[in-house]
Amino acid sequence: MELHLNLHEQYFLKNIKEKLGNTSISNEVSSKYESLFLSGVFWVLSGLSMVNKERKYLDEILGENIINLIYKLVMQCLQKKEINENHIYNFKKKKYFLSNIDIKNIIKKSKCVKTNLNDKIRIDGKEYKGKEKGDTQFLVTWSNLENRKSGKFERNNRKDDNKIVENKYSKDNYVNWDNANNTDGHYFKYTLVNSLFSRKRVSKKKYVIKGFSPCSKKWLYEPNVISTLSAIQVLFLINRISEDDISTKTLLEIYNFLYFLLDEEKGFFHFSLNSFLFHFDGDMRFMFCTLSALYFIKLLLKKRNIHINLYTNRQQCIDWILLCFNLDGGFSNLPGSESHAGTTFCAVNSLILLKDENQRTCFSSNPLLRGKVIRQVANVGKTANVGKRGKMRQNLCQLIGDAHMWLCDRYENQGINGRVGKDSDVCYAWWVLGSLVSLKVNLSELFNVNILINFILKCQDKNNGGFSRIENSENDVKKEYFNYYERENLAYKEADLFHTFFALCALSLINHNVRRYKEKRKRKHELFGNATIPQSLENTLQKMQNVHASFAMPAHIAH
Image (cartoon, rainbow, N blue to C red; front, side, top):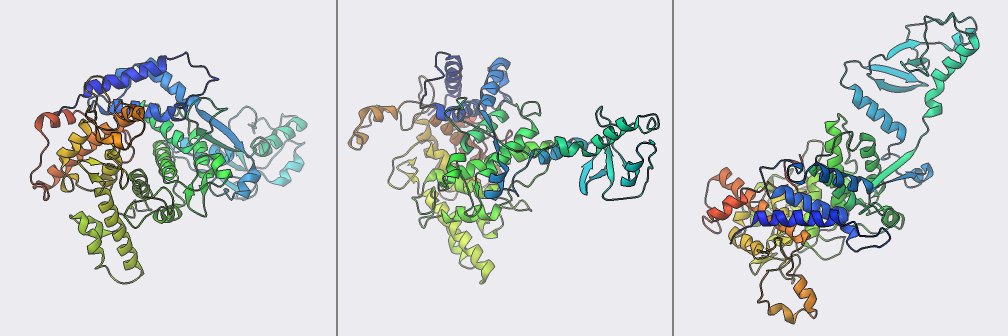
């Protein structure tokens, strides 16, 4: 079967023109698709980025006007809220939250790193690091303030921790020492006192959070972690990640929003402010979305010379994720629920994001995971050393071995399903295969990759472009016995943006995984012999971008 990349590209472009060109929608009328607006924008833009490897930026095909419009729509979804300081203390968020003063100091420090100065400025016993040109140190003793009428002040070079004043070249607070004798005493008193205490008077502590809502109807939708992640990913895709596009102050306030949703006792993140206030249960999807958003924020801050450890509650999050592990080998949405391919994907990638100080995950820290035969990993773990550390390794090894087997069991009837006893769905090709690739698995050793590719290609619309949920075939008599709604059964055969996007992600994932291990090992596949992808189809797949196994976007953008 053939893959029609040009047809799918036109399918994405058609949807962009229809959605952005539709101005007849009233602001007062709600639509069921509004709650997925930012996520839908991400699906379209990421899918459009992956169909052509030669195209680095989307403005080459969309144009600058469309990119500006998308950027404007995304930033309209940004909401701001000021949190009362009492709530910060009541919810025990003090150690995570950054006040406006903290943010100001972080930004100031990052801008000053370019210079070689490292001045220490102490005001009222507090230390501030400043590296701007023009910063100087001088000492003013409090006894000198009593002689302010004479206009003569003693400048000392001795260190006094409590009496060092900052001298900055600003119009309001700068004191000209050369002209001090000619200055009126009353005016000079006012100027010097203003210089000493202006920081206290102007800098009032405020705690601000910012997050993205699904659409611009801020009175109807509140910010949540899924929309926040989608918005940040869209900004990466359209290359609007500079200081002018999204400021460091905004990024740190988004960080405040994400950590305000943390349940520190249980170790999970909530969906939104209301879910936090009403103490809703955790959700594996929200855990992954929050950690992913923090990853992108950390990536941007690092480029701006700001280094912050954003995963301060690493162990609590890992413990909660492991509570969602079931005996069948999969991960559930919350502890005690049924295993699902989507939540297993979120759990595996969340554990990968939670790296320690040495940039090692709980997977990479276990040498037993390097075994070549995946299904023997659990058996190898039984030979681990006895003791607390040995038991931890054995349990983790057993966990990963069971997760591998559960993911492999989703391959059934030449397709992939999401749960036990469910029919195949093309989007689960991404959730299942993405989890295995994140665990550094060679897919060609576990599956017949040609059957997987044919399963996905059977769902594509060869006339209009796009992928449907199930096989796009006229002969589907079997499903009529299990579905009482004929319209719903027909809807499964219609192409949509969600399944089109994840189908293309799965195809890119399979192609680059097979090629990587073929070039790395140069040996025949153990289970299915020397299985190769047809040359014509392989040439088409080679035109696609390499997709990131965790974030479902071009890999070069997510690094």
